[in-house]
Image: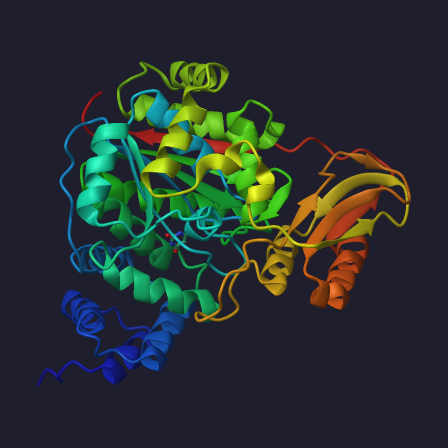
Length: 445
Ligand code: URA
């Protein structure tokens, strides 16, 4: 006889490597919706999934159930394209890419996430801007995208609410780096937000959830297949995350770095990836005939200031005070800073990228538990990157912290110079930032 569904039985089945049925998965997601799933049991189930994986079918059922947990917006036209990243350290590209794409005619309905594990979150970063509302109504969100081509909000109670719950539990239970969980989390949100196509930035390297390239390839395929199953145009791009992207790691300081990019003064790696991904969005929208043409259009939007203007419009429309764009001191900032100094001369050859994310969480720039409040002001500015030569005594990084955090800052400064960065006598081989791109169009454009 079929046993009645219960969290206990479903956890046990997954623990014992049984394939969960569509009904079991739907039952769990519906229990979340009704507020009947206890956090400790959901956490146990997440861990069982993390350890034992999910089949392709289970991943489909989970994505579908999470998608159905909330509203699904219509996609008004082929111009509706979004970009999402699996998450990394200093990964702030959304604030550059979305305005570029919008300036080129793409409609970007961006529903973004909060920090996860050692990686920062788009929503946490933009909330560093005074007054900016990430929780506007769905109606307002839809209107803003239609009118201005851009809006950026956090997860709402309407869109994939089951993901909101699971995301916050995964963040604090070390269950993030799982292909089925990442696929279902990202795609349930994206498929619900009324899109015709998605550019997915899949990070790989020691600062990413998928540390191995082969795992990143599997995740890329899982995401692409899910998108295509829903008739979405998909571009997956696997990019390097073996060192932080750009120089800034934190919330307010990452926003500053993005504004610098939009002003045409950003760091090379951050610009390269932002132009590449936004060019992909312009291409998927059918505005450019090729990806390369999309990249050229993206470059023009930086040169002529239209991307910066879109960013400003977005901030203004969502109640943010946009005056920080001309005066960064209006953003939250700390009263103290401590430098991390090179102990010897040499080329920076390796960075422990994840450690930088963890340092930022330790300072309060991310969450160690779901109830933690984000400190927008703290962060780390990495002056030197892989391939740079440093002399003994040079500043490698600056830690921005509060007066009461001096001993933590000292520890971080020492960890950066002694453990997180490797200095060698020979210049390391140049690393590629963009490692693999796959495009799968479903509507023949
Ligand atoms: N981003 C998401 O939205 N979900 C994940 O699981 C990882 C990155």
